[in-house]
Image (cartoon, rainbow, N blue to C red; front, side, top):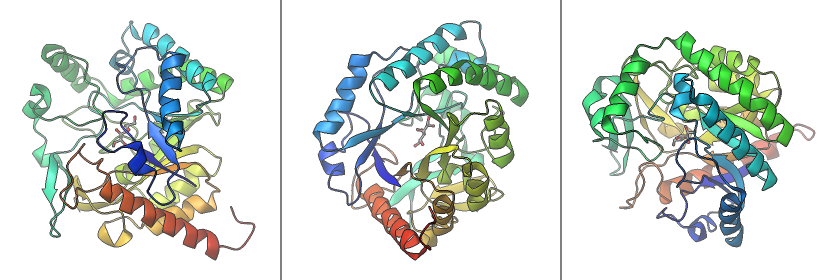
Length: 352
Ligand code: DNO
């Protein structure tokens, strides 16, 4: 397991030098955050980010993400030009020795929460979601924003896209995803890049907008669209685990046994209803997910790739990007590293 940490670039209040001091963390997960979706990433721009990570004594393990332009998700005629840019960006990343790329296929909003400062009894705050609290107005007016959203559309275009997706069937979204997969995976395969799709978060349709990367059946369907190891998954325990019917260790065993899990996000959630949850601390005891069982399954399928502690709570008065402070994610990293050490040492030699 290659313990890594997400860094939002030079704008991130968490510095590479801080990350370097977290026990066991040597990998960095980042992106070219200044680039708009659909824009080509040049080699010199990629090299500059990689070099700044390396100067800090760390290694750039994963690009999260190369965002997929909305026209591709909407299946518009203009998508081909953005797909070409995507293919060239992958070639440039490979030429700069970057071999794992995360992306998602969520219409418009990427991960979504209804509260960014949900108070916990210990005095920390966390991110929370409740279907009942999703406010269409707040989403469309820009009153709610999360760091992952690359909304390049003006208000009017945003509303138009929103209505477009509400009228789009899940099957049509599958077709758009398939079109993207068929165009991009041969390039990824040829240049030695592992593509890791992130599940939808939350993993169900929101406000009538379809979400399809949500459970084991759909993940298997997705993998079968292009049956090659380059076309794989980012297994995110927090996203998938916000649904009680997702058996996470079972999913790791099923989806990971042929080396199709390329990247893992580990965090815990406390489910508070069928479509509501808050993000707890990483420990199994704090949320609804048995983190030990998930890691045991990863160990058993021989997973050795990059893992990052995902979101953290805000603790000790820290402020910063929602979910992406330093302190609680660092606690998560040491906890996960400890679990992994215990699992590896208690397993018979020869296993993973
Ligand atoms: C949230 C993240 C997601 C993820 C993208 C991948 O914190 O896990 O925003 O980066 O969905 O494309």
